[in-house]
Picture 1 (cartoon, rainbow, N blue to C red):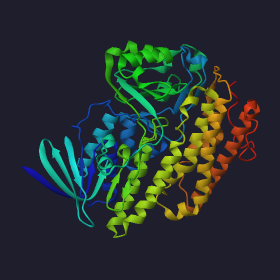
Picture 2 (tube, rainbow, N blue to C red; picture 1 turned 90 degrees about the vertical axis):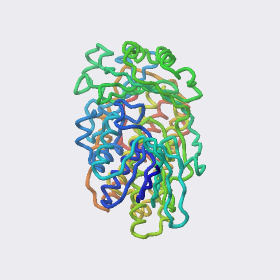
Picture 3 (cartoon, rainbow, N blue to C red; picture 1 turned 60 degrees about the vertical axis):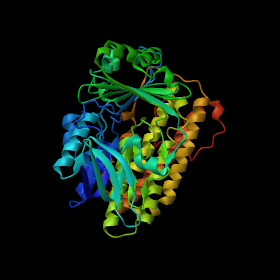
Picture 4 (cartoon, rainbow, N blue to C red; picture 1 turned 180 degrees about the vertical axis):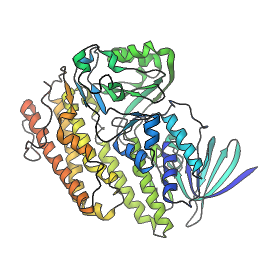
Amino acid sequence: MSENLQADVVILGGGLAGLCLALQLRQRFADLAIVVLERNAHPLPIAAHKVGESKVEIGAHYLADTLGLRQHLDAAHIRKFGFRFFWSEGREDLEGVTELGVSTVMPTPTWQIDRGILENHLGELARERGIDFRDESTVRGVDFGVGDAAHVVRATVHGEAMTCSARWVIDASGRAGVIKRKLGLAEDNGHDCNAVWFRIDAMLAVDDWSVDQGWADRCEPRHERWRSTNHLCGPGYWVWLIPLGSGAHSVGIVCDAKMHPLETMNNFERALEWLRQHQPLVARACEEKREKLMDFRYLRGYSHGCKQVFSGDRWALTGEAGVFLDPFYSPGSDFIAISNTYICELIELDRAGKPLGPYARIFEQLYFSFYNNTLSLYRDNYALFGDAEVLSIKVIWDYAYYWGVLCPLVFQNRLADIALLGEMQDDLIEAARLNLDMQAFFRRWAQARTPDNNAVMLDQQELAWFVGMNAHLRDALSDAEVRARLRGNIALLRNLAATTVARARAACPGLAGEDLPSTPDASTPLFAAVA
């Protein structure tokens, strides 16, 4: 027997991207017939194999506020204690190395997410809200309708053949990339890095790795650094430690493919041996809990682009089915939020009878501009990850750029405000160029100096302007205030760039020829030099 369905939208993939899109569409269009086809059986196991457990401001805002999941996040997941970095290459004394982080929790909430718990909850919500969510579904093919004709998806659901005719087909199938493969849309983005990760069904309490009382007292609440996304850094790599609401801990190694070959860490024993050399504290903690190992995965060349993600012919790609950048700074859910929002806009335009082609091109140009600007934070930059001072200042710059430019567009619901974006085009182009210049500068700065690693905590709470940017992300702004906020943030970035270059040039004679982007003043201070 073969089942034949009709829908307005069929979503290929019911993971984070697909289920969030389905719920966002339901929230916006009560009458929309939505079918979601998910390969895995539900309920998923907790601490699922998927990565993407750390949520930063845009992704957290999307889940908590756009989709209304704040109560679930607070009840079932872990409020994050910010992002935290230790330059602990080969070291066993966390109190003796440079630490970058916050001493108290930042105002805008973010969370550590157990993907199994979250996606089970999303699946339940989808069914409660009348979405036809079908797990254990394998998509066999997509036949695109010509002109205004419906698209047809062929699938097997619980072993039975099924076809679904729909006006819209959205590919949220992750790296399976159903539409990407069909249309040959894959694209290399020049960022060659690999990752391995595993879950251990136990807490890895970083706070217990030092008995130094002064080190413990740097943070309030004390003994809760474990709630941070902890990054343990060295040349060409970083290791993540992420706690999960299920009680498990996620561990990952992310590295430049040229500096740390995947073959040195592509099973648990090799990963342990690699950690013994580079991050012995992590190795020891994992070895002590090895009987609680839950899974192990690796991914070669995880970063990828895509030639097209939105089409006026009523199809689109979201999540990893389209593009994926890098786990550093955890932007995956951010870009799910952005792409899903554009897809909702396109479907609304279609329902209103508007021509889709021009809007699809505009939204895609905007999406790719955000993607390419963010890609510049990573590409060719892993070599400097072992330099505590340069990477610390780069992290501050990268977050100021993120909070100052992209976050206001999302938090103020202006991603599709074509009038605003047109008016601000020159300002946004200036910010993008300044960011590219600064990424190149960080590379030159790291090459021109000898890294240091002193026993100091660089507390982001000491940077009042930085905390203020975070605190004001959720402000309710008028049209004029949005424009003024963006221009004020870009002016701050100019001054931050000038301050950074002046600082580096004063300490590093090899950079004496660097031109200042502008004249720095005292309004955007940085940490005292690490050295």
